[in-house]
Image 1 (cartoon, rainbow, N blue to C red):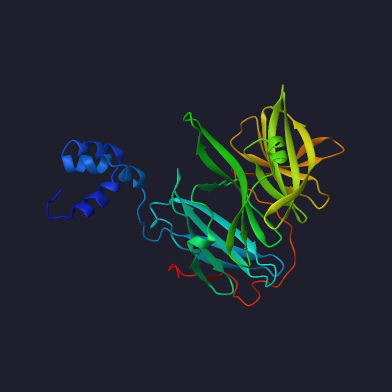
Image 2 (image 1 turned 30 degrees about the vertical axis):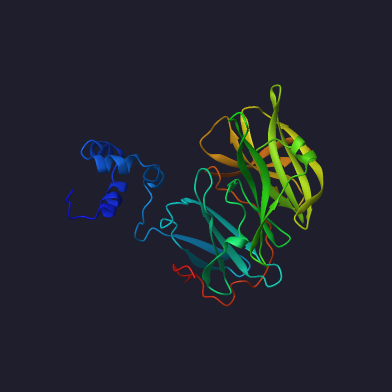
Amino acid sequence: MSDNIPFDIQVDIMNRLPVKSLMQFRSLSKSWKAAIDCNDFIRRYGFHEVENHNVMIVLLNPSIKRSVGVSVPSYMDQPDSPKMVLGFGVRPDTLDPTILKINYPYYGEGPWYVSVFTLSSGRWTILGNNHLPRQTIRLKRSGQACVGGKIYWPASERFVNDHGGVYKIYMLVSFDLIIHRFRVVNLPEQLSDLIPFPFTISHLGNSLVVSSSYYLEDIRFLCAWALKIVGGFVTSFQMLFNIPFPVDHVLKLLGFTKDEEPIVEANVSQQLRRSLQVFVPNAESFQNVGVEGDSGSFAVGHIKESLILFNFNHRELIGGFNLM
């Protein structure tokens, strides 16, 4: 590589090379070897801005059969925070659809970058650090739930004990759709002793639901608790069910039918495709409803008729890529 090329540009070029070529570069120059072996380079490797590599979220109102596309700012310009979590909810007092784009590093402690889009403004804004949770907290991409004007995620925080052992503490993280602020919701010790970790979340009516599964001899059980949260604290909880299912199945609670029957994403006997299943109390078993998809591709929610998107053209594209 020519000496006329600034070294930082040389490093950026190497960041785009395949691993095999990088190994050859290490043996050609001491400065290249030092740059490639640097922890910062290793952490950033593979993340670079890609032209026209952007994300679009589609908001659909089935009541009026109208949809709009929202352009999501590329996260490729944040190499320190390549992991992206998206959140969605509707502000309860104004019915303003709100989208969150959350970025942070895959591992360890690192900065959060959070952008918020509101349909009423048609633009993205960056949240200040005073609105964010601790940098050591990581959200679990095992679903979200919107209850009482707040979006909730399961989350965890990693610690190291005096003997060098690593352990995690699990919790909930909420985002207030009115004041645009995150809050950590700790689980009561009594609930932490009961629920297997990690857990997933959904909602039933106005209650947040946490669920997980556990083994007991040669049977697995899907269990769930309904939580009442007031002022950022879990004030009460109660068990909803404890359902046995075959040990070679993997079930994830997604939500409930109008009759409050559990709806799950099921992986049967390690098949590649997942199926949507509903628990039928009379049969005391889960029954396939005939819908299949990839892992994590299912979402369940209740439809509420509204005029949201009425003032927009069908398939209109909104939201720029410049963070405000």
